[in-house]
Length: 275
Ligand SMILES: [Zn+2]
Image (tube, rainbow, N blue to C red):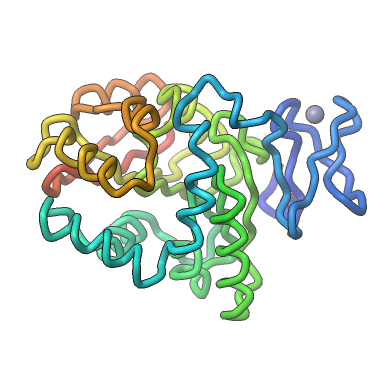
């Protein structure tokens, strides 16, 4: 399928990957007989009840919805800056800049996985043909939509979707980014394979995640996050602690090549190309 085939809202069924029909209240898959509802105009491709998920990270979606209310606001910036100061993490804004510099955004079609309130998408929207953002939190996506509308941005599209079942056809994206979320996905291999599926050959993936053996150690960061009360202990326990070799193995097993990385304190920024 060409890039042109995913115009505004032209997602595909995340299960069978067939085109969807527009209905007043959602997007309908004729093959599966399933309707994916719009929530405040945002397509929701998550049909399962996440509060009953076996993944503690997915179960914690309500906390993410709460977090969305303060995300990008002064109180979250305060918490985040305190982390930065103590843990040696790059500033969130700097991190996003580094991530977007790793991909060539000019005139292209991109996907930001776990887009949160859409900061990355907004920052590159002026240079882009079209950009998509997916997240599990409808609260985050509502904020993302509001911010984009306030700024008059029209080429950014947000949807609630599972990284393991993306609502996009094969090989349509020129780049994919994922900042601060890979370690939270229940199955790293499945998530990376699915990202590879929707990328064109040679397209670049840019990721920021955390290392087990960073300085300070990931354990310290998790303790701090737990103390912040925005995350449940069980969800934090389910976070993957990567090392560089493990990440490289995942990437080569899921269809990527050219792994290159930089380490900043406990975080790793890496990129790789789809084979
Ligand atoms: Zn379907």
